[in-house]
Image 1 (cartoon, rainbow, N blue to C red):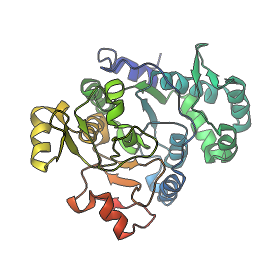
Image 2: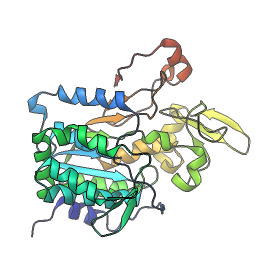
Image 3: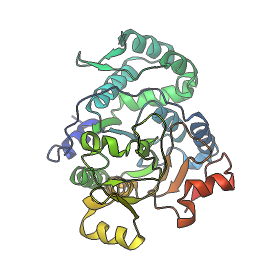
Image 4: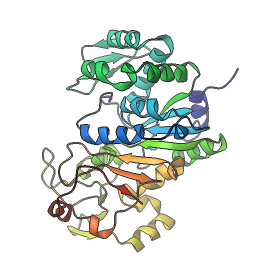
Length: 336
């Protein structure tokens, strides 16, 4: 019997469990608030020439929810890999794949999905339940999203599900170094080449006040600005890299030399964004287009697009104050 992509991923990671034992929490399906950046991303993908779609051995990797299908519906990779630190998200995705397999038309999929939604939760394929992110505008999203409005996009996803080419797994993209290496080795051995990577607003979760329970770190944070709605003194950090000595209550900017030294000798001491970059590179992210978005994007926040894995911004770009003074354009930059 031919091994499908999910079985392949499960087998590759069978001996490399996640180091993070996280309790399940709300799953994500609809995009949150980064509407403009997502639109920019999709317009960029729409502009791809036909020869850049459906490339042999191509792979889409993504976190978060259904926006991954909007991406894959345009780029037509041979395989789709969906990642999340939340174990509930893996069960949610496996449920969605089953719905794609068993429903040949978009309307049938919508009706089947709606039937699984029960009082703020979703009944999964194994009869367990996962809690939806609240508030949710899922009904409106499903009525408007391109992969359910465009018959060709839906048929592509339906075939992918039927052919066993969509997989999901749980991984901590800040701490699972060994699991990431095992996954990357397996993908390379299979000959898959990353085409697109959708990292959503993942950098918004590198927050010091969640470090203990979420990423298991209390001494390394990013950023330099206050973020409304969170505990006093917490920071925002899209791409900035800072070391915080909590005992001395001092903040010191990481130098490129320090980062390089840690990257070689002690990767777990790297700042979160550097850890994340190292891990996604190990998975296979050293190639392809990488998209990082920010929730509630303001004039000093922007979509970042990288060819290959995200890298540190030049020093002149690290200060959000300087970027505000320059009056950024809405369009996200393409960085080398």
